Image 1 (cartoon, helix red, strand yellow):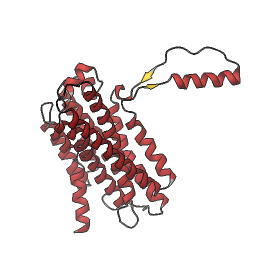
Image 2 (cartoon, helix red, strand yellow):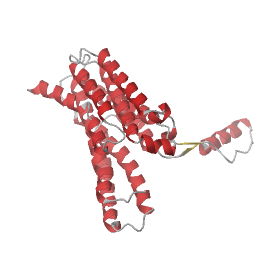
Image 3 (cartoon, rainbow, N blue to C red):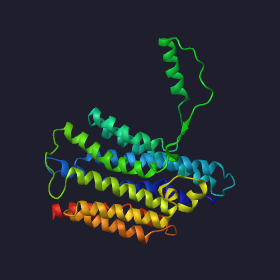
Image 4 (cartoon, rainbow, N blue to C red):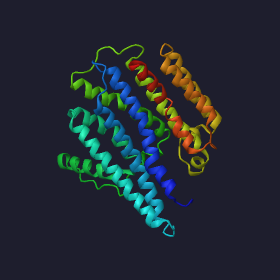
Length: 311
């Protein structure tokens, strides 16, 4: 195990959550703009999406790094590292307060929508035991049906991360469909939801493009960790396919299919071409920070679109 250092800790607890969440910032800003009846940008879904991203990713990284820190008591940077953990918890607390404030300014449907998409991310590595649910159901059946069968001493335990391909699926749905659902719930209840999106956008484009792009990016990060995941038996898409080359071919095909489906939208076309190019540039030997850049294959073209609307 590599020694935990302050630069590594800062990267995992601050840089990565912030960089990844800026894609959610760009995507939620785009959706808010094109779905708004007055062509404005509502701040509420943006704050909700950005802070949710930071909390989900930051809490996961914080838990991992605290376990790594506790297992290495001989680290010479111990006191300084402890301070950085305090900074990270403060960072997450501020994010949680901002999220709560934004949700307080929204209808209850937005809270329910946010909880639906954020809960799986927060439970990503948490073992979920069905024993308690089983006991409750048996007691209810026993109360109403006279069943006094004793519960089994063992029950299945589910870890979402261990479900084959779930990382890519969750990333796509949460950061694609989830962002759209949050923006829709905020704008619809405020009476500011447009009936027709401005050219060249459509609801189908936003959902398909965002979901496929985020899923493919998640798979690309698994390409980076292919060898480690293979040894640890983590069922990522590259591991299941058994080949980085095969994975890259499939990712390229996904980007090209989206581009061809929405060829009339130059922003989606440019984004897909850029993402497909990064698929072949990046590999298992590329630095981790390079993969952070790949997370913004959407953001750059969203910024291009928004700039054209105001220049």
